[in-house]
Length: 190
Image (tube, rainbow, N blue to C red; front, side):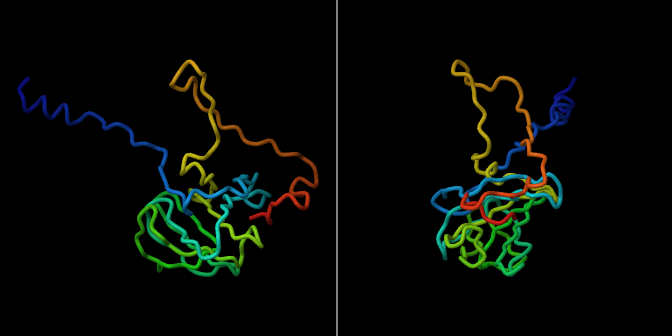
């Protein structure tokens, strides 16, 4: 086999698969407290929390978690909303006064707006409702920053044992499944 043929054969090897876990940035700096965690709905109209609420302060800069393009920047249902598309997924930020117009390409960590108090899920405190979607499926945005569910590893091994298992939370099956007790700090279902 000559050198040219060998070079061609080597170049036809499949490339290593890309890293499937996106690595993003916190939309608020410094790393904020999580006021309410992601709680995926059972169905399209089911109860749940379709994102996370991050504690902030009015006027605080809100940053894009991943690089992408702004596809919405304006008022929606009385709240300022910014949506950044990242190919197959998109992130949402509310309530935010937009600092960038629709069509703007943004880098991860670039300011897209300022946190507003009006429309806050955590009123009278200001908090950012941060969402992440793939199509119409809601995802946990904390996975973008490595703050998602914890996997425990045995103390004697550095590498994971077995494969991760996706387990859906068990929801109570009774007429008041969506009811939440007052004073729990949970805002309205989003």
